[in-house]
Length: 93
Image (cartoon, rainbow, N blue to C red; front, side, top):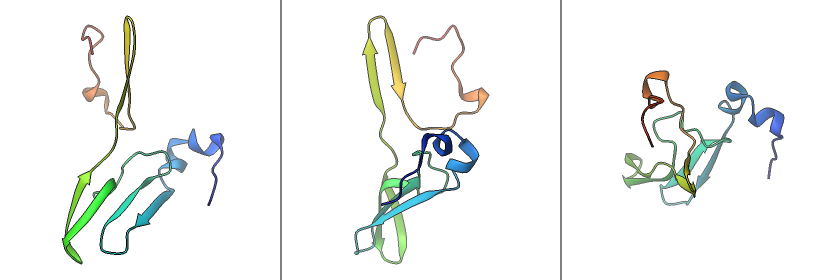
């Protein structure tokens, strides 16, 4: 197993250039970057090939966790959002 330190994981450009891949031997796989930011079409936690080697489908792209501490609520996710995707300060999530 390879280990990456916090200095690499905090560098977005460097961390998104390092990827992992896990196969199941029958055409399915999981893959992403080391920080969990999906940058490719078939990055996901469960990608399957219904008619190998073509016909791939991403069945589970990522996992999201919600943390709730009254009155704050936080979404823990690894998505890269553009400024236009961010909620306005007046929007309550």
